[in-house]
Image (cartoon, rainbow, N blue to C red; front, top):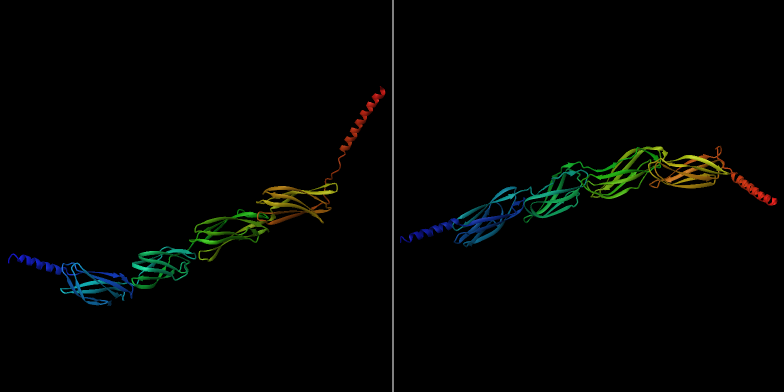
Length: 450
């Protein structure tokens, strides 16, 4: 009898230990954070780690509206086995709500507290980079969430490209990009997503850090302050895009009331920070002081048309780049000729120069050709005139502009150099004849004497 007592005590101790272990409880809440009105699915797992079966009589949920709120006659959980149940609970008020789950077995009642978190401020959307006024900005926005969100879409509630950005499923955070021109320091977005099985559309407003942008810059340098009429002066122009975005369909043009400029130049695209150097030709056609205006027209990435101007003042002298010099008149018998020099005093080459003489219905021309800067070419015009002749020089410059200067040359009253016939050949012929006759006479005389 005494020998069996320790065995009985060991068995009793084992029963108490098994009873002490009871049922272990674990749970999972999905989603972990709710928006007001969301439903969370709570998965409750009862595990029997003991060596004997445990009978569960009921599971009762209190503290919030749950479906189902109670289950009776759960049944027996065998040794090493488990029992799983799922119930849903609605998050109604912002804050933390404590749910209490009571599991009643045949030997004890176990209480399990479950924290339910309801937050009306997630997900969040931020823009950290500065945004430039009046230009197209490509901006990265960041959507963050403490729990996993599914099928996330971000819609810009303003003019933007793209209008909607799909971010898909993520937890923690994810970036998206849009392009837009800000007209306010505040932007509104609509975020649509699934939180668990709950669909939501929430609006978020962000405050921008607006800064003044750089722009498209025209750098124009005039190589001279004074010009001659009819000259052709190159003017270098540099176009630089200092904006934060690219520009497109660029046209650079120039105009002046004092003359003509070469044709507009087109540029397909300039990236941010990119420059392009061009050269325009200015051909003054009248004297005076006036402006030369350069203009660049372009479009931003959204198709908005913009322009920038740059101007400077220049003086055109009351003098042509080409001059008539050293005019001379000669007469040969009854014919006259007018000669002279055509001087290029300008800074550019003269093209296809002609000298033309006119008097009455008579007209004559002399092709001179091209004349380099600070050089001259001569001409000679045979004319049939009595009193005066109009001498005209015509030329064109590098951009094809035509010019002409004229001068009236009086023939009467001039000291002409008249060219007479030279008698020297006649005198020589006579002398030769005399010599020949003398020789012949001498030969005849010798013959007679013999």
